[in-house]
Length: 123
Image 1 (cartoon, helix red, strand yellow):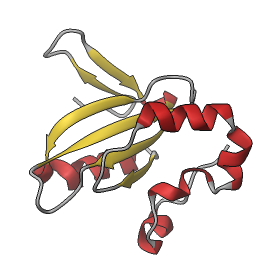
Image 2 (cartoon, rainbow, N blue to C red; image 1 turned 45 degrees about the vertical axis):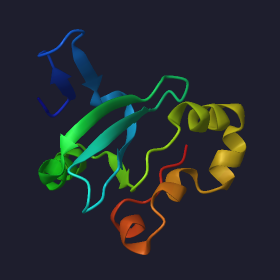
Image 3 (cartoon, helix red, strand yellow; image 1 turned 120 degrees about the horizontal axis):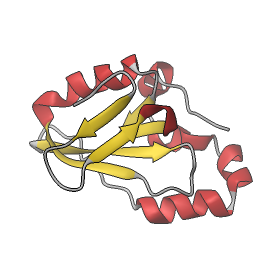
Image 4 (cartoon, rainbow, N blue to C red; image 1 turned 30 degrees about the horizontal axis):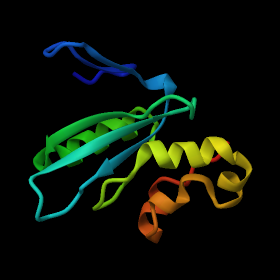
């Protein structure tokens, strides 16, 4: 259940709670017209924290979820493939200067339209 300050699911154990103030970006994976579901990855401001994932969200909900993320003032991006988040976050933590020099999260939004909507976040 999305709220203005967190995302909560109490249906399964363990409970799932994401505090939105701790989130730097949301990345939608497996976004494609030929796939019925997509995944949502929450990357935290503390890059040492493991990204949280919500899997197999119906594609029909994508626009609604994007609107909610934008209403929470969180940068989002999307791609057709799943990323290796543990490896990616280790690379960023090991060399944050290089990450910033390479335009931060800009590589997640390669097209100009997405960059105009949500500029890359850097620290």
